[in-house]
Image 1 (cartoon, rainbow, N blue to C red):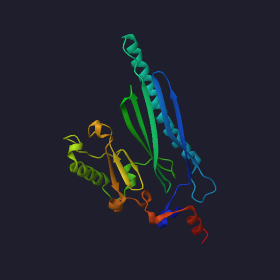
Image 2: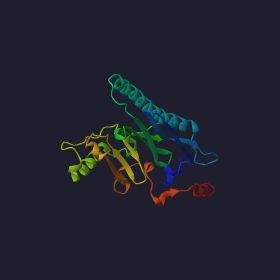
Image 3: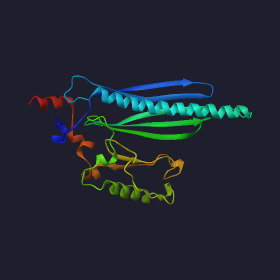
Image 4: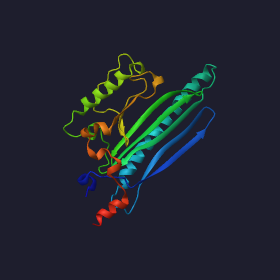
Length: 246
């Protein structure tokens, strides 16, 4: 029974988030990898299947390792060429970290930052991966799923982002004018839907990763209630059990 769908109440997902950190320091290649692993809590009325979480864990772990291994290969090639040409060796460092940004109503939104540095300069790579999963189906969802079916969400997002750019034109490239695609990068927070762009995509690298938060207090009429919560409609496990006993 989808209790929150009937009452528009928000429920915390009964999952445990394990913090993982792997690190190694070498002569020319070092890394510190931080990433999450999710586990289902047992004996709850509001359950999550562990096999769904295992798929998410595998997806995130694979992304982090692929990033690290790719930079390791790059370091080997660069320093092999430097050695051949009697140039100094370059020291690479890879750093990843994460945040679980939304974890309610069988919706899980997580971001993982992927960065690498060379000779303590950079970052030479600065990427942000998003993982937005529906824990009932195990499938990732796109920005279109977040909005109500009758909303022209691409137009709404495009207009908002371009409006925010116009308010701070000096921070962006002169020709920055976005047209939001179906596969737009985003993640959810308790405050709103965060739309973001790649480094050097619409603004100079010095600006960092451009982010635009569509706050629920302004855009709630456009958004499926399952994808946002307010302090007033968040149900704790104790309150949920009390209602089930009625």
